Length: 106
Picture 1 (cartoon, rainbow, N blue to C red):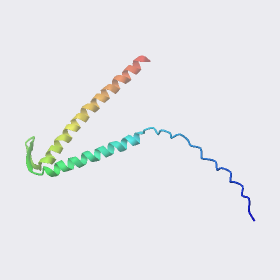
Picture 2: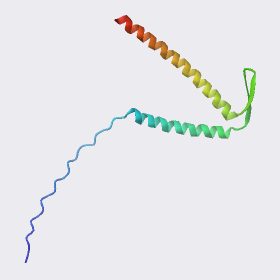
Picture 3: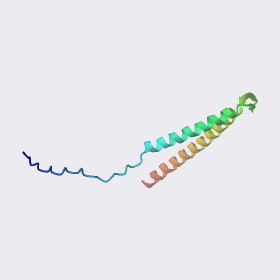
Picture 4: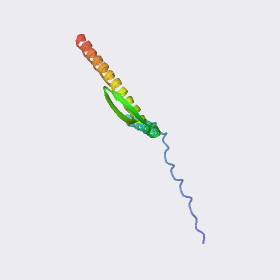
């Protein structure tokens, strides 16, 4: 006895959709910045650990012995704070000027 098998109908192929491009978001940019910051911090840690020799730091009549790497880090932080304060003052100045210009247009 032979059985006649009908060929199975071809299975429908899944519809292929073209890949969609995903836009970059602020969070993805933040992750990139975090990774860069971690790398910079690792290099900074290596720098401090390689410069542990004591240096005498004098400021406004005060004197302290600090590891050289730490003293340089404190100087860099002080410079960054100074730049941030100047930048913040400029931003506030520009905001005030923009508000005045908008009021003048009304």
